[in-house]
Image (cartoon, rainbow, N blue to C red; front, side, top):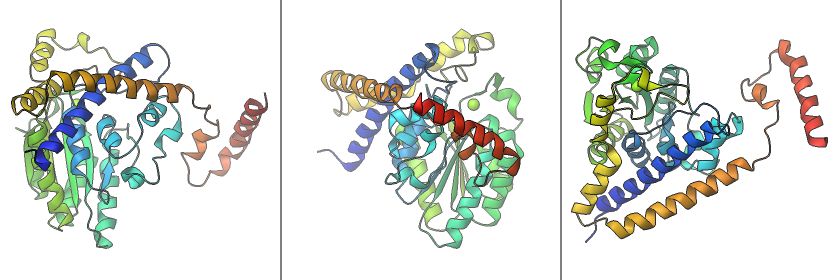
Length: 337
Ligand SMILES: [Mg+2]
């Protein structure tokens, strides 16, 4: 008989397979000039999916730029994820009825989202919410001041915060070995007085166990946790990068032997939870779902030019008022031809 745990793993696999297909198509859209610079999540499917499965509706998610699987599981439609990467700010206005309704949008600057997550966690604590804040970052972000300041305040204020590092071994072209002299990124929790945990970032089951524990500790008022998920970036840094210029093909080949999607599929098949027919059916479903999302994205009406200011400022600075008026006039022209 299937347990809840089995169902969760199968749901996790289906999301991971869907996101892998979506990711490939997103890169193709960029290559054919129909998407802006895109950050692939190839190899990070287990991390993003585990985060999405472990979060509850009342939690807050503060993403960095590779968290497509998590945002999808929070209820952000795939076409809206493409909309954001296509340069349309409306992609960041997550559906008001979804779990993502209070989540922060994608963060491209490195580590600035972490201090914001600490602020949200501080507010949640003051309001006595039974909620955790999950913030993600890459290995490169752990060298930033924002990262250390966040962990410090999370420790001393006992914040309901979980910081999840996707250690994919590369910060653009900087390898993990040149990033820090620290033996592990999880060790950076020691100075903040919070638990630091290392986990296999290609293992959905292990990720779920660690994330469930850390988020429940946070919700229960027991404080923050740092998690280092060890994985490997199988893609270029973004579509604006060419990793073959600095990365050995043999290292990449080795990393593929341990990639998370096939690994989980094999584990589920061994347990009798998946088979070739289910795989064929699901791959077809993934293709249909992603094609529909692309179709919706490509047929969206163009964004108003004023969005570039309206989504940036709560109150428009006086110096930009004239520029906004000029942009509004352009929008008027576009609308009326
Ligand atoms: Mg990295």
